[in-house]
Amino acid sequence: MTENSDRDDASFFSRGWVVASPMLERLGLARARRRLVAGLRGTVVEVGADSGVTFEHYPPEVTRVVAVEPDPHLRAYARRRAARTAGEAGAGTSIEVVDAVAEALPLADGEADAVVFGLVLCTVPDVPAALAEARRVLRRGTQERPGAQARRGPQERPDAEDRPGGEIRLLEHVRAPGRLGRFADRIAPVWGHVGGGCRPNQDTEALLAEAGFDVAALQTRPFPPVVPLMPMLTGSSQPVGTYAL
Ligand SMILES: C[S@@+](CC[C@H](N)C(=O)[O-])C[C@H]1O[C@@H](n2cnc3c(N)ncnc32)[C@H](O)[C@@H]1O
Image (tube, rainbow, N blue to C red):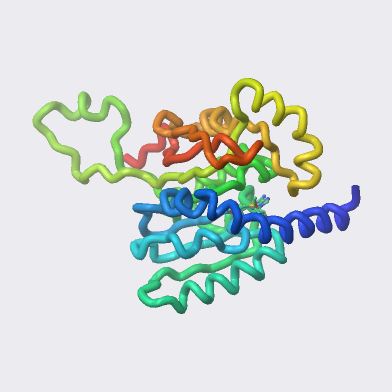
């Protein structure tokens, strides 16, 4: 397949997704998106922003969203939506829609308070590279290295208050167990071809753990009622073992 026909496939998929996603919003995705970004603050990177469907859900404490979208068709939609969102009453969030990919985020080390992955890790070609990039751009925490308290002695206090590091937020469809998972395995080649490269049978939790993220608090929910977009892996996760002190 040539580069150009790849681009045509992506564009065919992106046009279809813009039409299909409002139906999924009504099936509960809109609520899930609100949960996805609830409680975030500061600078947020949204990976694969699509047409900007999540923009309206950011809380006012988020001051800047860097919305990464490689597809020019979807990027144009997202830019229009960013302009509309900025015009809404009370919207104090600046939204920059940029031409970039998850595997090479246009941010400095430690610049982001959060990285948001919504229905995108199933499509990103190199997931380990994308997760390494997320880890690179996340703000480091100020928690101490294990053993620091013991070395310091019980009476002494650390100089600074502990501050948690940045987090990733996830709303990702993953391979189901049992029959549904086997069904996803069977349809994966065709699904990927018509679905812009989407992998319906990806074990995203395992990839996160391999990339050094703490997956203990993530949940797998039987949602939405659309095969093979069910179940969804949701929640917040932080890199394990990044210490600033
Ligand atoms: C299924 S769409 C949905 C994304 C959207 N966040 C949502 O919640 O509806 C997947 C998106 O990932 C984008 N994408 C594909 N490969 C990517 C990559 N390597 N880096 C960033 N985004 C990518 C696509 O252009 C598309 O916008």
